[in-house]
Picture 1 (tube, rainbow, N blue to C red):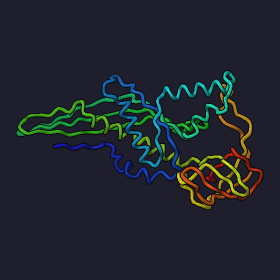
Picture 2: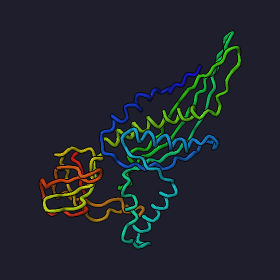
Picture 3: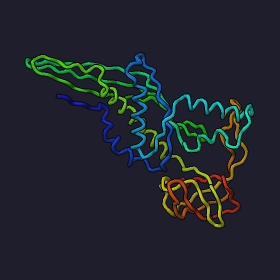
Length: 288
């Protein structure tokens, strides 16, 4: 007999997480999770990364896996360009992240399995309970702003049994580990989705042809024709006085556009609603 149970009952949340998220189909980079537990043999870091990729996909977002080394090298180059130590080429290093909207990173900081047993005259059974602790963060790639930074917990149990006193060992069963990870990461994803639902949609004007304004949105944005977006003119760089890094640009509202139709997955056509003098690169933000 076997009975697998997620102790904190997040199964329904996982099934409904796709309905919970109401925003655009953002690309979310998942940085490979670190394994900071005393035992390195159970590969909780790698398992957590793969499980989170599946959960992100179920939520209605598009996961992109990155190693921490790839991200670190890109950020070092961006920092050098922004401080003037390295000249910018035709394509700035920040453009290397142009297809990524948010990133999730984290680490497994604790993992343990506890065995519980029971006996009768003709049988005995035991229940293996896995417990995991995970630190995680959701960051806006464009601004570097941390939207969520928290610690989550997950538990999972698996009951095994045999007759006439012959027990069954469950130690090392990957399903125990994965169950606890899925529990913790599902709860974490629910929190991150709730935060993303609060964020306004931000994009850019791609081109202007007469009265037609093309913006980066498309069917993946999930906006319906008639949706109105405010348009902002980016200004000077905003520099963090402590780090010397550019963390954004000043913005001035110059008008608005109304979405008329989508032209594929990533591009939408809009028309002028108010204002004038729009240019390629102007910022487009949903009225939220």
